[in-house]
Amino acid sequence: MDVIATWFKELYETTGLNFTVFYDPYDWNRYIHGVRMTVLLTVSTIMASLLIGVVGALLQSAPSRIVRGAVNGFVVLFRNTPPLVQIFFFYFGIGAILPAGQDQFGLRQPFIDNVEWAIIALSLFAGAFNVEIFRSGVEAVPKTTVEAAEALGYTRLKAYIYVILPLALRVCLPALNNNLVNLLKTTTLAYAIAVPETLYAVKQIWSESQNVFEMMLVLFVTYGLLVGILVWIMHRWEKSLRIPGYGR
Image (cartoon, rainbow, N blue to C red; front, side, top):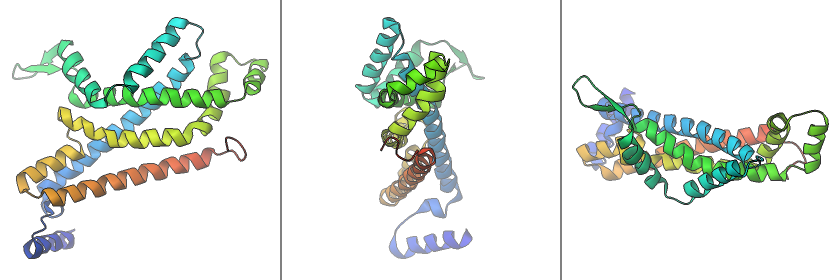
């Protein structure tokens, strides 16, 4: 690590390219903390949005018109409004009317902080798309398969969990992969409510060190690597679930 730090210091002295993040421990710690926060946002929102998608797709076929209408309204609302507006709505709108406590200095301390609001807003945004993705997968499952499950004594819920959903997942994985990759990139919007993710940390570094070009390069490479890792994981998942001759 000392060799790398020395090399980047020499690079700065000889060329003027100031990659402080690689030789300044303070900037490095801020950068790493930002990456960790991005990973936390990504993992949390992926898990939550998948759950929303699975439950929403099930409720879209519910016998109650009210339930189906509520799910369809949720999908239309969150698919057709900008995710940044949704984040602002939850953080500045809903957050302002919810009860709050006080910190040790007597200042207002909300029970849901900016990180949690970012997770909630982004999960609902991606979940609305996942509902439609899972619905398309469910509709692709042959009705004869569903009828066979019911003939074996499966309830509607058990047939959905053990028969329909596993088959639907294999059909909709390509579209699901795209949505989850987009979700990773959308986490940068949490910057707007001061969530200390990667973009926020990098912005702080270049504001102090005046090395915008260098830190933008670091930012592009960082997100390229994160997206590449997620795509690799999703492709491995898709390959492990593949059934020869099904959904192709």
